[in-house]
Every structure is written in structure tokens, then in C-alpha cells.
Length: 307
Image (cartoon, rainbow, N blue to C red; front, top):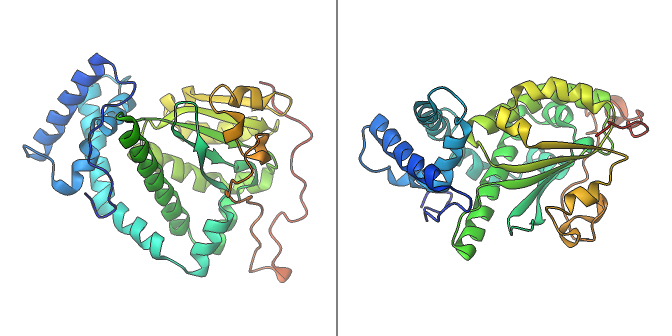
């Protein structure tokens, strides 16, 4: 076990093909050869599970030399995880952090896991329409924001491990639902730089975790914002994104993957116990009265994207 107690139990991935299984074994051997070892270091064993290796294999399946590219990506992740960023130390520090800055991020970042999909896997909800990343970074720091994002990655993996122990096979991917109700142009565009940095970090170190991403209640202005964000997304990630405008029946689409009883009431489901924060503009402590930069601005809810 690692210091974060991440599982090292190697359950078979639920959707791995026979050909992928052989490629995963080749990838494992190639990584160990590159590291000059016969077996993984004990603290790295959790990363050598087939479900994790499969993600890195799939992340580079469309390049010219997928095996060596996957090896390079995995080794770069290990260096980031243990050396350049220190993922475990950051997550452990975040768990213990009770400063005002940490509480502000936790209380205002409107994203998190809730309920399960029809496969029995946890669902990730992101209320990006009310997210004020620029405000959180301004009032705390970018490192606070990224630490929380990393903590959510850790808890996501822990939840997948719990389901894997119960089912005997490892779910590799999440259903992700992005709610854009309340999206504001200024608040969103000021947050793009921080969003892009976060997405780049997640794609590089936690690849191929997306089963499907449903973007719902999308205002028309989102088309312009998406053009600014999409270039940093991996092509495989972009292919799994489905965008539904405000006139679309988003619950009908969500219900293909998640039972309405498992969907929060604020999104049209019947679950009343979701504790994901509502988000909203973060008050500016540097301005008189603590108003946010867009306290008086109206959300863009009159016009919506076509599907």
C-alpha cells in the first residue's frame, strides 16, 4: 500500500479486450525495462495494475509508436507523481489543511462525485456554469486550486477501487456530467487559463478516465468558450464529449447512463442529498464591499447552443 492507501489489488479491467490484455503485459515489461527493474517498487505498485496501464496504453493508441509513447507517458507521470509535483504529499497536506484558503476552495468549487451510473460506477458532476476558477485563484492561489483537483482525483480512484473490490473487476472510466446553467462570459473567460492548466495536468497524468462527458444546459456563448478550451484536450477526450443546448431534453440523455433517482434534484433528477457546492462568483476581498468582479452581471441563459 502507498501512503495514501491506494489499492494494489489487480482486478481485471471490465472492458479490456484480449488484444489489449496482451499489449498491457508488453507495456508493463517495457516500463520495467526502462526503469531497470524486474518488479515495480512497492510504493509504485498501484500504478502497475492492469486498469491503470490500460489507460496509458489507450491514451497513445493512435500515435505512430504507441508502445514506446505509452512508456514515455507513464514514466513522465511517475516523475511528476513522486518528484516534480509530489502528488501524495500534496494530497495528504490538503486533507489536513484547515486554513481559510482551503475552506474557501472546498466550499466554492462546484464539482464532485455523487451517486452511481447504471454500470455501478461513481458519477462526476461539474457545475462549470457557476464555477469561478479565476476568483478562487485570486483569493487563494493556483496551487490551492490544483491541490483540490488532485485530491478529487485521489478520491475518484479510491471510489473506483471500492467498486472493483465488490465486483471483482475494475471500472476504468467515469461518466462525467457538466452543467453549464448560469454561465457568464467574463467569469468563464477569466478562468480559461487556469482551466487549461488543470486539463493539461489531468490528461498527462490521469489519462483515459472518461466514459462519456455530457455537457448540458449549454448557452450559445459556450461554442466560443469551447474553441478556447478544446485545443488542450486530448483527441480521445474530445471524442467522448456530447453537448446539449438548453432546449434539449438533458434528462433523457442523462437517463441513458444514470438512473434519475441517482441524479441531483438541481439537475432534474430526484436525489435530494447531493452536497456538491452551488458555486457562484467568489467575492473580491480587494474591492470595497467584497463584491465579485461580475456581481451585477446576468448569466447567459436566454440563448442556447444548438445540439
